[in-house]
Length: 364
Length: 123
Image (cartoon, rainbow over all chains, first blue to last red):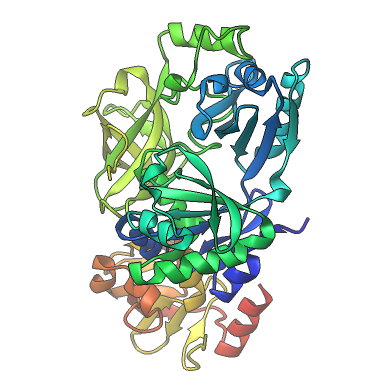
């Protein structure tokens, strides 16, 4: 099956992007150097095409209550124009997808799912809102998504939208005009920097991309691909669905128990399993690791105690472009979770010294 | 990108400048496919390597690839500058980004630039 192309595919081609297949989409992996793109986001700004992400609209008089029942947190309590990180949890407590849920209006929500999860999220939500006065619509085809991330992003997006954006707080969303187009402008992201996500109609995406690129160029903005998005989110300690969180992990395993709201009126799917998991002593915990040398731990590599016994497994790892040394996230036995604990990582047959550290690895 | 005509190539995307002491590197095509090279593990000077077998590793931000020996022989020098600053492999793969030098004792089929160009265009 041919990969799907975003409305910006031709723009990326013109910029010389190298493409990769990601969750059925042909996406820019990088344009020139993923390290240069990474540093641009940390020091200036980067613009990303995230149009592969899925958008699901849930609306109706009982949309909030329906989502309280369907999701791990409590969307009915979100203020209008606010967003929260959330999760769709299986009855077993395992995570089906991680989400950002925006409350656009009293009875209207926009849920952003991973590209690989949008079909599952759509069908599970449809089942779970059954009986509530709310409808679920997979609106992914109606939205393109452009992210502008980095310390210069507020100046760039503010210039491009001819608006002072100080009113838009972290995890807020507002309708705006940008490049003569109606957009939804959110102060969200996945890089550990200040940043914006611009939700627009697919046909509007090339014009908005060009406007942001033109305004951003003097600031040092670069077009950025998925390669640097992964190292940026890893430095920021943000989990990636399919690596740190899967249907076999609960939010508590991943250190994200704070997302779960217990005691909601009417309960929610997965509550019993999650309550049991909350109250049980954890057997494995997601931690950060740093290692000696320059060889990065990679997903699937074994974590060993100093005696050589297996105590866990790496889920993500890279040589941190910002910090200059390898960083990784790993699930380890609970008795290895204290920062400062010395462990080993088996890097293709050689055992490398590693230390458990606090995440995030990088603070802006 | 143009391929130096005086080099020979392998289907594993290495180049070799054959001489009394032959110089080995990876092609621009390989460097571009890997992305930014951040770590090189090269065979030890004095070690014997076997054509077609892994003799080191090239690590980029996103992946790890084996470095495949292009011929049988003895490693006589490695590019310490590239080990210290691996980005030279991306910047100048056919020049300053060379990886090691070897004395060849046996060699299989190598590709000329035309054949290698056909290989990567067909890929």
